[in-house]
Image 1: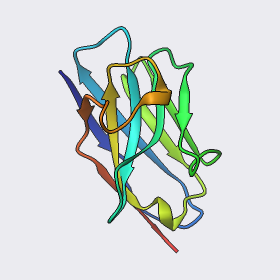
Image 2 (image 1 turned 180 degrees about the vertical axis):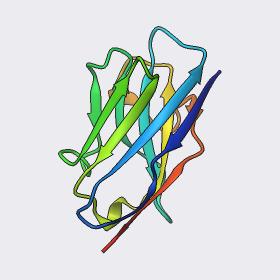
Image 3 (image 1 turned 90 degrees about the vertical axis):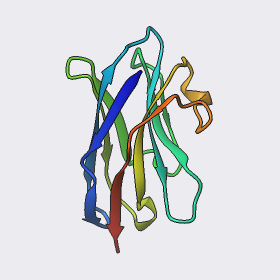
Image 4 (image 1 turned 60 degrees about the vertical axis):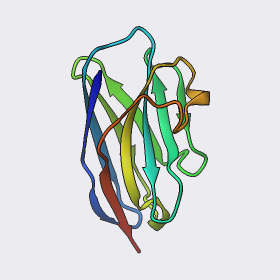
Length: 125
């Protein structure tokens, strides 16, 4: 099994920045995807960004492309989400995810194998 622990959530003004981090532990696999999902009040959980085990495959939701950056640090066993130019519509609980797959294009709530507990991000106007 894989354990995921998010941190870095909080409140920020519109246009500000916030950085989320996720520490992964437990069994490792040769092929996997680390990702970030979010769920806003009254909305379905959706993928925000994902990165494959090699680091060369990256996916961003259209709503965050150009503003968010996903990265991972193999030495520290973490994945981060740098969020810039935040908007009120970015307000949501953000979840770190682990998926036994190779393609970031196909990651979804149904494919995710492990979920973090979530961290709340609130963007005020």
